[in-house]
Amino acid sequence: MTKPLLSVELKRQKELDGLDLLSLSKVLISEACSGEGISESSFLALVQLFTIDEVLRSDQFHSITSAIWTDRETLSQDQSVRFADFLRSSQLKTISSGNAFSLCDMIANYYPEENARELLAALSKRADLHHAAEYSLSTLK
Figure 1 (tube, rainbow, N blue to C red):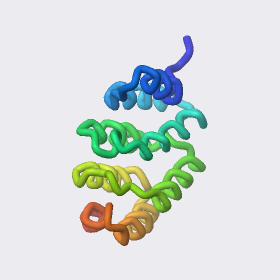
Figure 2 (figure 1 turned 180 degrees about the vertical axis):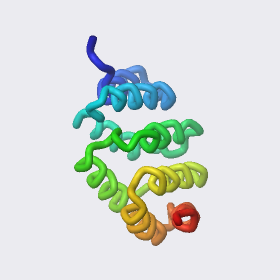
Figure 3 (figure 1 turned 90 degrees about the vertical axis):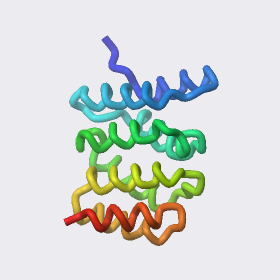
Figure 4 (figure 1 turned 135 degrees about the horizontal axis):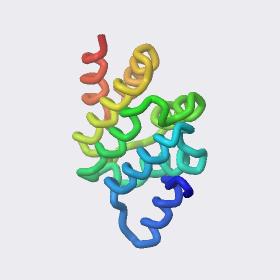
């Protein structure tokens, strides 16, 4: 049996002209639980999710961030570094306030403390994530 891939499910849902983030997060968790983390194509699909305005404003956004930080093996070390680089350089201007907090909470819980501090400090300088990043920084011990 072939394991589900986030990249395949995202493509399928886009063709149907609608995104179900709960379904996508279940596929992400299922793929991550395979013991091998997520494939490169699914990593690229995950990054793509964070560029879609509909996703950044969705009430279900937390299902994706929760799927990532629930298991530190979801992303390979290389993918984890590249995801942090993407977050540093991306413009998330349409992210809702609640989703900004969800994203920063995911960073604080997923990354090792030193890496989380560095990334959150960088994100706190941006208007779209300032308050959420500052709050998440304050929760790190």
